[in-house]
Image (spheres, rainbow, N blue to C red):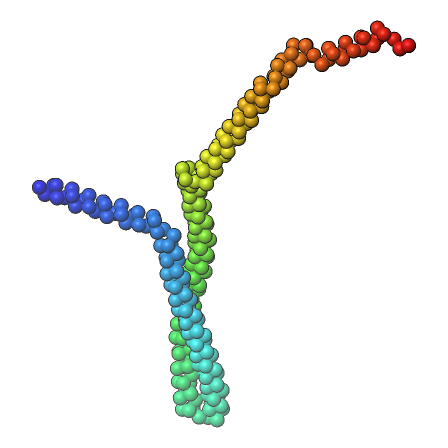
Length: 231
């Protein structure tokens, strides 16, 4: 019993999978379009994140310059203090210089790591944009092919259908030809009957046999005229 139930469940899962595949196949273009829209949204978010990181890198660069400028200024102050014999003051200024240089170094390391991340993100964004553009072109090709296949199938269905315009046109042409043939037969029969009733058919038969009453009469008149010359 358990084996039977297991087989039934397996069959049901198989049916669900087949149904799912059928839905995916039938809605392939729509699914692909939605996936591309999702990818475009994700790419837009990645660009925004990249822009934010680049702005942060620019801010770090300004902070580094500020610390370096401060250190340079304090160095001038320290020299003046040394020149004035203010050793303690010069030491205090030197401590400030160390602080500025340390912060500048820390900020520089942070910015370098950030720049590496920015370079990697730029490369990924560029590749994603290219791939997305390629998929967009492929989608257009697929949609065009789909329309061609659908139109071809529709044409084949219409042409092969008994109710298609070509099919009915063929039937109409056959009826016209049949009607014309009947009319020609009727006219031929009418002409034949007319000849039989007027005797024209007999004259034609005699003429075909080389017996022409009219021609014989003409020949007789000519012979008579030749036998009796003019006075």
